[in-house]
Length: 540
Image (cartoon, rainbow, N blue to C red; front, side, top):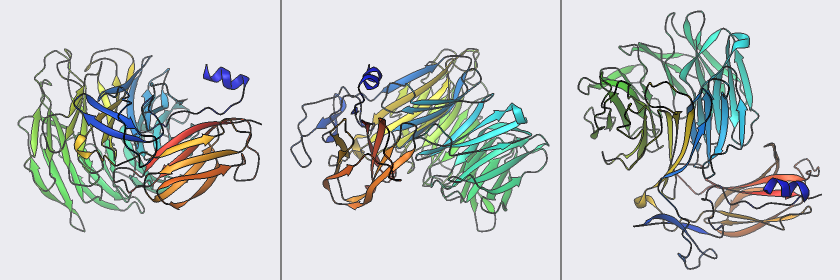
């Protein structure tokens, strides 16, 4: 209906900000938490009395779930500042990458079909990377994307190699993309690229017979770690110098690297932490968890949390342990309910918030669906904050803790449990709230446009909840940045800018739907800022 109206009468269409749930008023919004759940309340203007007259049926629950048809599974999903979700699907006929809106209905704004299969993805704020098999060169193709466009920022083809799972990462500071590929000559090769340009920064070849299993990168991108079966390689991304080659003890996947690159964790029937002493990595501590096998381990970016997930050889009772990396004694241990059935349940994916206050664990689920497949924990408690029962196995998870207390989780996997045969992939957008962290004074940024439609001049009005940096950008329908307005530091309150319908080059923007994005920097620790968006149509 919306599209037909635009086709017949070119007008600007105003859409609610993506940082709010459907139906939320855009005047000024606060988050509230009460015994009936959490919700937004609205006020007429900044500084006015809060009137809890509008509760938007907010639930601490699944926002949407999308099931992708075909003989596929979704094997990577990442959330960007709580606004977008990037995912990849494997196996034809639907292999490729997809962008979704966190608060939408699960319909992707854009999708790009891939080659034979997509292996994995990685993200930094609004930039993501993916790798796909490329049968035309008997190798792989690496792509770096901006979430604002379905056209890659850059791509790189590498011949004569095989794609390994969990072997592509983007540094948290958005400087380096690292990828490990298993070369047909019989070894793993690590490539490090500049995120913006795709320039190859370094290349490192592991020893013959060492194949990549999992990859990690430090927050600034300076250090890359690869588990190549038994051995672990740690290299300098700028020079490809080998920092350390250590013994992982077993041919397995678990690998963790702290945000500053000073700590490495790995294991099999044990969990071990190594610490950088300036010239090598020394063993810091080792622990075991009964007769269990370590499946995954991960550090928070801040380095204040280490999470380990274990499974027994009977595959019937997963275990999660939370550590302060300084000690081998767990802060706490959580045992899943013992399950049954002939198919395996394994905790395959972990993600933490940047500062290690929350983390999420995804598992395959047992044949009889005894336990929920998605568990979200606080560092402070072994009791899950909440769980989600998925229809099948979870393969990948991500988590974001926003400044207003919202905990956003994305998860993906296959539409059947454990190792059962079956088709289809699942993707989730999930929300929960941390009442203790809610800042009752935090106001979301507001953006409006008038007149809408415009012909062609439009007044863009925005409210800064607090003084700080801002950017106001206008994007074309295909995702290209066509105009940047003002920017710099502004005081708290309402400001107005005028757009004359021209691009930065001085050309008239053609008729069509345009995206205006306001971004404010508010000293948020878990994200770079809060983004507010509006859609407009230029009438010529």
